[in-house]
Image (cartoon, rainbow, N blue to C red; front, side, top):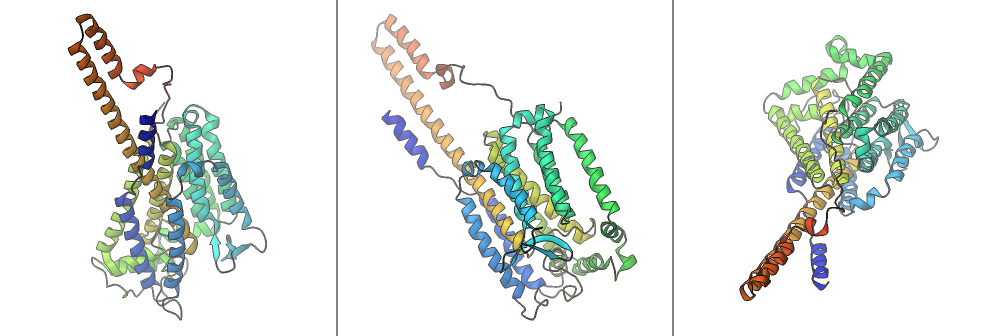
Length: 445
């Protein structure tokens, strides 16, 4: 009992380490974001560093929130999964309450906090990913086998999308549906069964885009921004001119021309165009490489967690990885003219209080996932090492008994040694080891 107590104490004392590649990519992208916010917004206000100072304040608060997330056990977060889902609906409804909700350019997406406005959908993205991760853990076998278990998260996502479209926020609605579909696929959903909701969802979102006049104008201006350069194609045409001026190495940091009142939202939605103009093709390749490292490492962590049966951690990593990859792809695609304008910021780089805060929280959760995974791996290594030592001691004792005993006694000692050195699963019996169906990636049938 004392040996077991000491071993348990030793295991509890083992901590983890944060993934250095993940942390490095986050710091690099955040640093580039600070530099580009300062450069792209220097001519927008009478105070040249107004948006930079604002960005740094939100970033400092975000770092504090990320630190809290990094120090919080994921199992304690999982306990509040239902409250997180209720929080998603509450945040999307509160924007319609007079006095709390705030309207900007005809869209009711913000709540007024007095000192600043907060875009609630940014918090919904994080809370929803955590809730869906918990759902996939609780019903991971049923999701692959039954219609109701698969349709429930789709119904929840559909209800959230309806509230987003009332704001309206078409870009975030599409992103949330894509995250839901991606997490269900990675959670082991039956692919032929999943194809039907995906097809209907794509048809429905396409119809919303086509039959809404202002969304249709965005599509037509995307197809030919030069047809109405001073009207609907103004943003995209100036973004393309900024990208074209950058060429290979850029015009130099701070020397962008398009940010001087030509390119709207240069420090938020179109910050990538300013980056392409000032840092050139090589600078944009560096940013894309950092995003690839961040997302790739995140998905790798998710797969390692699933392999170690840490499904909640793994699904959180998958969800955040899908979110960052899709949103960065859309933002970069809009700036390069390969996608219609969506109004999505570039994660970790664009200015924007709500986006900065909640992206920092998401990064804190990712780092916590990496910490708990490393801790679990190190504890498993120590535990396996302890089992090997016990087996060696038992084998030595059996050899000593055989050397000093009579032949009949030696046979008995050999039998005892075989039992002592048998695997733990054999000595305990197989009745406690229940076979469980685990989710697979893209399983058909």
